[in-house]
Each structure stands twice: as structure tokens, then as C-alpha cells.
Length: 196
Image (cartoon, rainbow, N blue to C red; front, side):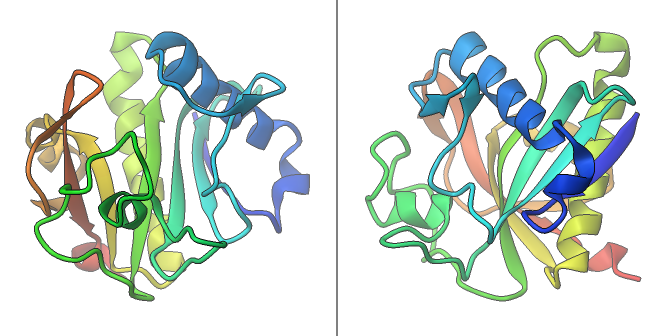
């Protein structure tokens, strides 16, 4: 099992890994979860997949994607868009309620957004926890390398059950909301205790 953090600067060094990650996102979010999301060439994407973002990928030695995540700076701007959680709060996204945060969405060099976090649905149960832990560990390392101390993310509201297992302090930043039949909540992941 390997982890790679992709950027537009290093995509060319990793063959099909970026495309495979977008294919895995499509398989989970569009095919399996039946979400209505943009897709092209068998890949899922959205307006936040820009050169400002990074993508953390857990994969095997053959490039099969087991899990992934996108990191976007909360200072990002592209046309009318910034980052997903903030744009939802601003009413720009019709699929995520605008009341997802208790306070105004932050804009800070030290806070990044973690979005499109997933573990592929066909990852065997025997290694699922290990894959998830590796994803969160690499996400933290990538965030810290980018100067972030915290990441905001919209997660399943079951996050308190596994937060301690992955070694990251997490705090609810908004109410539990049902989105597409699943209870979700915005959470802040605190990476300051793991700074070296």
C-alpha cells in the first residue's frame, strides 16, 4: 500500500494515478452512491479540481486507487467559487445546505479544506480501517507541508467513532445535516499536535 500526494506540478511523474483517482471517485460517488455530479471520460470532477488543489491518494503498486481526498486552500478563488464548504454556506451549491457551519467559513493560509474524501467501496473489510488510517495520516502530512494546521471537511456524522483511531483531534464545526439520506457534519481536523 502506497500513498501519494498529487499536484498539477507532479502529475506527469505518476502516470495514470490522477486519472485513476478521478475514475475511482466516479465509481463511488456517481455509480455506487448515485450522486448527480459532473463526469467526462469516465471520471468525476468539479470546479474545485484546479491547480490550487492537491490530491492525496492511497493506492497499490499497480496504480489501483483504494482511497483519496482533495485538499483546497480556503484562500482559493476561481471565478465566483472559493472552496466547497464556504460556497455551500454562500448559497452557491444547491446540493449542500447553506446552514452547514455554526460560524462564517474561514479564509486563512493555515486552514485548508479536505473534500471528496473516500475509501473505494470494493476495498476489503479486512484492510478498510488500515486504508482509511493511511489516508488521514497522509492528508495530515500533506496539509502540514502546505502550511496548514487545520482542515475543514464535510464527513459522515459517524466521525466520532473513528476519529481517535486515526490519531487526529476533530471538532464539530456545524450541525448534523441529512444530505442525500446520509447524516453529515462539518468537522475541523487539528494537525497542530502532530507538527514536527
